[in-house]
Image (cartoon, rainbow, N blue to C red; front, side, top):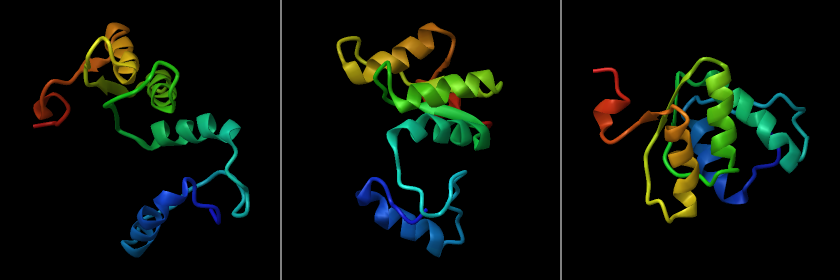
Length: 112
């Protein structure tokens, strides 16, 4: 909590707190950010989410970890398809192939 990572998220961190938002961690306040903790953090993100939308992702990204955890938790997972030659679309295209809900318009994810 006392280490903002990445540092460019400082403005977002301050904005969340100034708008009565919540910064949450399962680790102590002075725990440094360690990459091994990131998949565990993604479990909390998916657990708190009603729906999970993946816009872009490589096949081994944190977004894919979050989406897979969400599926395990029974959440609806949505993905925006991308160009088949783009590494940043490989993860979303894989999610769709594996059963994620394809999003091609705003109505696809909103409860109207």
